[in-house]
Image 1 (cartoon, rainbow, N blue to C red):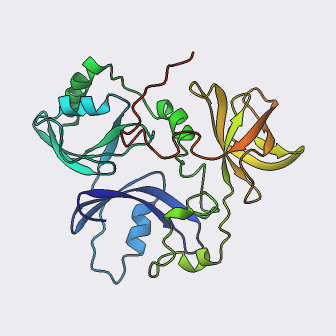
Image 2: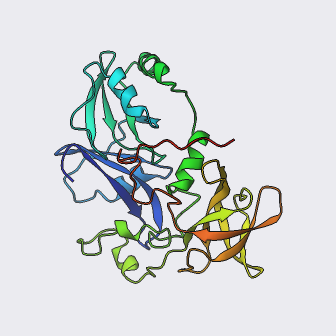
Image 3: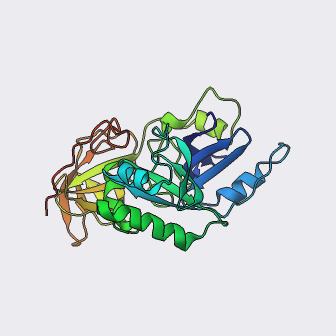
Length: 295
């Protein structure tokens, strides 16, 4: 990964179980950041730095994001010098927002067109927030928390550490086997993963109602998995979810019943993730049509 680029990175225990996933930023030839989900990556990195010429530290950086069809227009308006070039998918740029230099990346937790910005200790965070809010107002930008991204991340098959996967699941279980370089030199968990099943256990769900997190997923009346994420998709006009199945390799289209938020079992089926935009054309800016909202 060359400087100025990001990559998706997994950290495993020695037994192949997942500890965390995140975005690895290569800011300089010898400077990396790891923007992580929940999980103690810092201690993991410190523990495995022994014998290496590397310094591990927590830079106390916090990440937020601007996501959606007008996000690049907002970036151009917010940047003191206009749109950074180049700034391709999974790229890194340094821009000035109201006189403050800020690292941004062409990434996000929604699989929408968008970017993330990184607030460092030297920043005036309140001034930065006011500047971005003012830049986004003409484009209808609103401020939301993680709940607003929950539906899109399920549709997109973006996983949440600690719920969709944990230390008991391997990358293959979680459908992340394509991110394992089996020909790479030694890495933590390699020996265990060499002998692990390659068939995924994590699956998307389509359902008549909203799946209940922790609810059972049954096949022919028998428990076969559990719901790890659930929501209603306005775009698909369906209940959607992610399920960790007990057995690997179950095919998309398998008919199931799912425990939903009303406490009842509803008909559903297993589905391939992501549930649409399977080539990630939306975040790449290739697909620009905006679906009509259905209330």
